Length: 321
Image 1 (cartoon, helix red, strand yellow):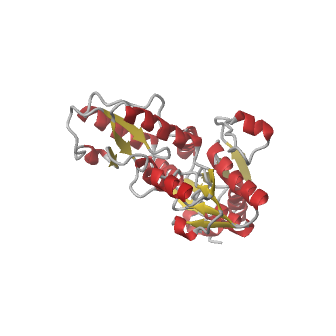
Image 2 (spheres, rainbow, N blue to C red; image 1 turned 60 degrees about the vertical axis):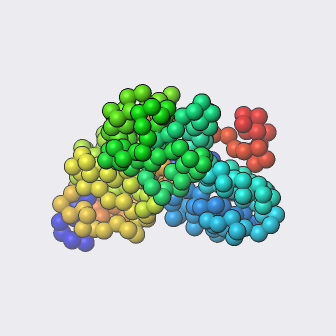
Image 3 (cartoon, rainbow, N blue to C red; image 1 turned 90 degrees about the horizontal axis):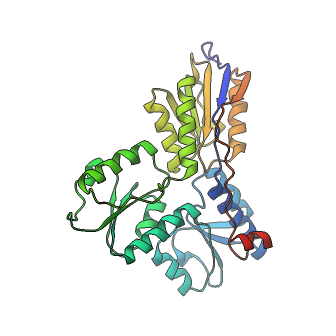
């Protein structure tokens, strides 16, 4: 170990790691495997985390993108990110037993869109092109929804000011970025209808807020999360904007000792799809680099719980659903 690496303390963000939607999605797959036997087919990665996906593969989950890969009579789970109406129709036509692990907060966006569409609204969606949640949300409609990724995109939206417009947001965006883009939307379309409640989910908001508290108090921040995870990437960006060096790792093996040269206090957080076991492994790796103190920062206590779909939960959960 290099002489200038002297990690002394690890500060843990609170909250961090799994959110209620991720907990629910993973449990849906595990319960489906237990009830119906392997294999269970899952459209897209159930959540964007390599460890979680690989663990479920060992238990009997098969992850696919095209429903043509699913054999007749199979059990299919939709990922937490949601799917388009076309995918739902195809699954029904093929006769699969389907369990929907779409995060209820994403479903809320879809339900609100369907209601407003009946009232004659077109939509602007703030989000990242190609992300499965964005594809699923855009796919709720056959037309009349326009994706914007940044402020510049707002000026290119091909609708006139007489169009009834509503705005929706990908749930895992940077809170600050989304606010900036929404402000641009409102400048161009002053009568745009905003969501009754902001679409960015409570867990994304809480984890970003925790990093805003943590980052100024550490020399470097480590975010546990896969590169495909939108909310994990946003945590790294939040820290960097505050002037703190930040790195994202899929596992403890990804840590590079050079990141900690001359830095005694390390911050640690995890995206909403990253399990706590990975955090613990990173802590052990940091201990090997000299850390002797590990303590949690004060933070919001999350108590949200989402019921399982009918057919997979116990009776009390089914009643709640």
